[in-house]
Length: 295
Image 1 (cartoon, rainbow, N blue to C red):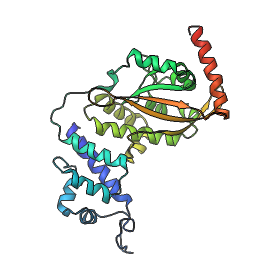
Image 2 (spheres, rainbow, N blue to C red; image 1 turned 90 degrees about the vertical axis):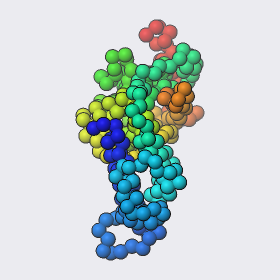
Image 3 (cartoon, helix red, strand yellow; image 1 turned 135 degrees about the vertical axis):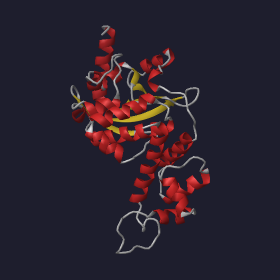
Image 4 (cartoon, rainbow, N blue to C red; image 1 turned 90 degrees about the horizontal axis):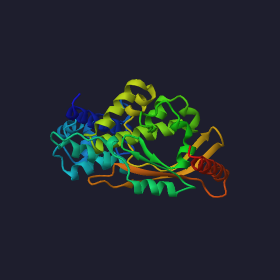
């Protein structure tokens, strides 16, 4: 499937799935016992968005190039899209207007020495840098200790880089490591979907999605849900094989590139005074000892 056809398919499936989840009552429309589907009909979306049914039907079939931002905004409001979903829709519209773009490869981007110095300076914070296709391209000693099962996984590439998505969906041990594996999988698939829309030229992201769709039944299920996340933060619970359960607050920080952010620093910290904080201190001590021994 070429990029243009894939873009139309993404638009069609996304709008269809969002339309199906909005009930007439949620949209402020009268309900009927004769209704065959729980979601809105195309003509109802068209009326609520202030466009013709023919026009909305064409949009839902993927013909989004040239559509004004005002109209897309009206459709987004009608379908009650979240901020991330709205961004995704606008990214799909922008990417549909590009003609014969040069290929992009997010996996070729490396961090500068200064970024590695920054990571290494955070001795009590687990921190790593991830790229658009979920490769961990750099990390500090504590990140390698906290995420030891991922760094030791058979899914690590020839350069020694873990890939978060491959680990979650292709390594059976990930289900033991992530206390809420389902939430981790949902977020990872949703972040990848946002990346595909943000830069459809990125062959490495599309190749990763294709690989996971072929190999992982769980990834195919989550990808078909068309959930979208532009950024992800919150609480992560991990079951570490050496120190036990960790509850960590994680936060991403984008590192700007000349054209767009393609790298993120992701930090993981424990709430001071908690059991997780004590366990992080143990891991930090082990990581410092290992670094001192040159391991």
